[in-house]
Picture 1 (cartoon, rainbow, N blue to C red):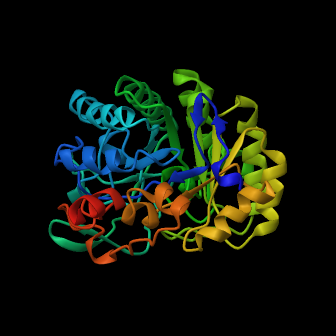
Picture 2: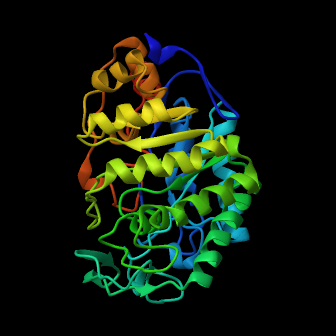
Length: 357
């Protein structure tokens, strides 16, 4: 079974092909520093081939949700160092996902209480949970061209901070309706300058961020996540077969460690990207059975697959799969609860066995 065959992703040697997907968890401290819960959560899952952390803001403007971590201050670096040390002590590998939420935010959720920024002043549909309860997300402020250059530098600095914190690499979040995806999608981007209108212009920001991070920490420690056609966070894409092959043509020459695709129903596009992409391809089929995901490995469509909630509920997931042990069921009611429930209290087989002995 291909699942258990070791594989090299950029600078990282993976013992198998099952990785942990990034999941927003809302367990960090109010200043964005990881908490001791974060340390234990990631340590417990170090047997995954690779851990990709929850989305982590590269700047204050990049924060969208409450109690999400940052990677732009000394306190953030110190907090994440505890996490990476714990994972490495267990023999694991971990990369941080850099996520700027752009317009998917609310001033009440950020340290500076500023209006969210975006490619264009187009209000997203939906509400944001804040300390004052659910609130409508405001009309964002369109970034100037000079400010866009500054945001690229924020990603660069965050990548350097990630290395200082001991991470094995960085994943750039270009998916799920957040800032990079907002630039890519025509319904969130009505700019007429070098960052809007044409496909080449709409992918420019993502390409610049990716190039900046790769030049800062090395392409072999840099990954990019995309979600072609994903409508999450009020995104509409009708030109995915133009946009994403063009994006891959632009960033593939960098020699990144990997491309991480959140796969929707368009199998033709995924097959096309598989042929086009020259390094490791990681595929996430959210909500599908494990056997379906493992089939992508056996067919060669994916080099590595990621799982989210299943890895959350099963800290020792690789061991359970190898031994045919039953799996814990995730408890969605506790996903964003704030405490240990549904976060660090899912039982591992070793814990169960110890308690029973």
